[in-house]
Amino acid sequence: MTAVEDGEKLDTTRLAQVKRCLVIDDNASNRLILEHMLQQWQVECDSCENGFDALKRIIDSAPYDAIICDYHMPYMDGLETMRMIRETLILRDGYTPVILLHSSSENAELHEKCANLGIRFRLSKPVKRDDLFAYLSNLQHPETAAPSLPMEVARETETQTNAPRPGVRILIAEDVAMNMLLIKTIVGTLIPGAVIVEAINGADAVDQYKRGVPDLVLMDVQMPEMDGLAATSVIRELETVTGRHIPIIALTAGALKGERDKCFAAGMDDFLTKPVAPEKTKAVLDKYLSGMQ
Image 1 (cartoon, rainbow, N blue to C red):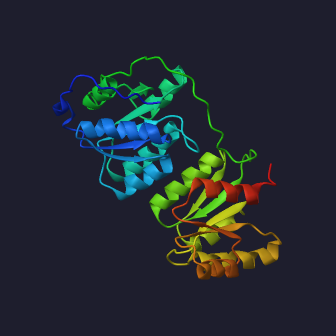
Image 2: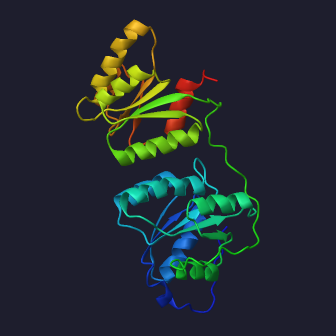
Image 3: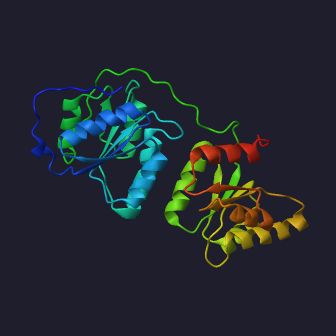
């Protein structure tokens, strides 16, 4: 939980460099409390419940001055979330300070992982108002260290797909870089050790298929040079020679019956609606890769 405190009034001028903050926490009550604290300090706050939604916010909005991220979250923990966000911010606007909230006993492994990701601030829960204020006040001071505070052990959430599939090969065809990053992160989180092959359009997807037949294809429908429907038709033609049938999953911006019918007519097996959701992606991967060990 996150604590609510009513102490002496804090000097909000110390937060002059923190105008906008993103809160990432799967617990709605915790998000509400953090939002309340930030609003009291005149800090504009956006909040979301997981790393995938956070990435969408970062892509679609103006830069944030700070990110407050919970460590224990389903599908993607706080460190994986920050790794994904760091990659995105490198593409966009560089460094953004992060405060990691956690409930597990602090150890050397967590410290090392945070250091590798450039996370200098680790704040134990329940979050104290004065501690959070102090961290936000010192985001620009590299000498500030994370304190050792009492913490309780939290239960890890099982997020991987049903069975380990070391070396499974997945071809992702997507022409938008940010969409590719999101889909790669979801797949990599659900199937650790998967070999992910990227293609930037339909023609590239066909070439990648010829170089090494994947176990599953995630195919964007709308792409330049050759769209996903045409690429699927070419791949199905190639399979008349090989005798194999590789699952091809359409990535589509719409779920209208007419568009779905076009996907199935081209030879696709299933579809995912963008923006891709981790729960639905997990269901599709389990469905078509369940026989692989």
